[in-house]
Image (cartoon, rainbow, N blue to C red):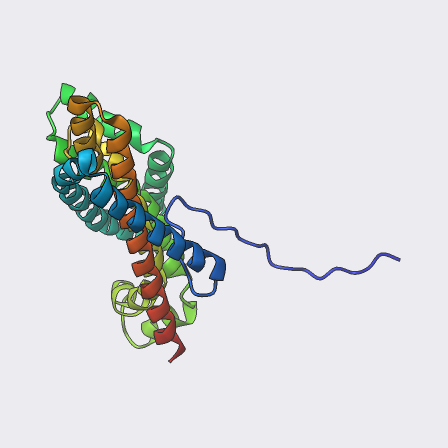
Length: 266
């Protein structure tokens, strides 16, 4: 006689291209984060103190690129959040046309590699209008990550119990007021951690904007290497700096998630 099996909910495996967030419940990853950060800082310190030629010169050459990297990242994520909000609202809209437009945007943008989007905006559209390199970089990154943010907002909004909407409507709020005054403030606690993760992923992807002559961290490294031919030393320094920045940001996201969890438990 065959044993009866219970119906179980499907398991969702979430895999993204963002950083591995060192959450306290994952002891192995927390330990790996500490080892990685200590190792990266140790390597950086050793190179700057004991291998000053050429690492110290490389290090002094890169700060401008780090600043540009953060400028592109912050500008892009701010615009992407706005695009993502309206895309997410469009994805759950009961208006068929709006829903179709938002869904098509998500499908098309997520189906085209970011590198191709950068080339298209900067080079292909130059046939009609010349877009400055920085504007092209921010536009491409914003449009690309806006599609991903749209799904984050959609999932966050749908995670709020529908009873909240019904209660708000019964109190006299219209649907727009309900969304912005009741649903989104609650959904934001769910949305914020993945937005932080996307911020880190976007920062890493800014390395692609170097092809547009935007003087980001990687571009500055390429400029130095092309004049000194110290390719190994230059890209070692660039990689270590990217790693340190990413590890620090991933820890900040972990702290943010932990504080949100404590707030929700109160």
